[in-house]
Length: 246
Image (tube, rainbow, N blue to C red; front, side, top):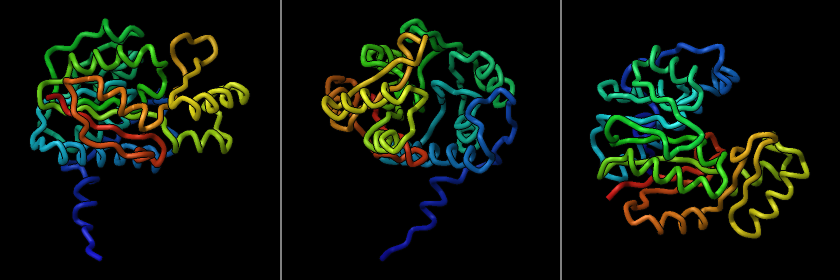
């Protein structure tokens, strides 16, 4: 068996020091080790996507749903010469990323079609965006991402797939009532897609999409070619899909 430890190290190791600054308002922070491992997991998958797409240099990066920089800090360290943009509906998170990582701030809105960017990007990371949106809003996401992605650029996004469904069946209700999550899972297993809103949050909640359902949706977008699909690859939880604009 051939061992390639250097490849694994290269995929996960930033080229410069990771900024350790944390915001006390970062809702994604649980413990230091897990927080860092989620960021490294994203970086590994992003680098794999770029490698597969043959995209050798990165000049402009958009973190779509940046939060407080869990992944953006890794991107800053891995691509120190790239121009960063931080976008989220959480204005405090955007402001923190701008002040801490030197990112250009873009405040998102619930209506993704209304979001405007200054130019296009050769790399877009959208971690855990579609995991919260109903089917009717996936088109909004696609339009937003395509508008921001330059020709030849790579978009890496995540979804809840079969691994997440197994987790839900094992008792993780994803902040939904047990009866609601059970109905969601039944529909997902029957049709390949299902979503439910969080209480009092119309159009925002939890969605599950099977690999074949996601690929069928992508095949309808002539401007994109599929670069890679990895089930449960981000933090051993969410599916990761990479596409390139042609």
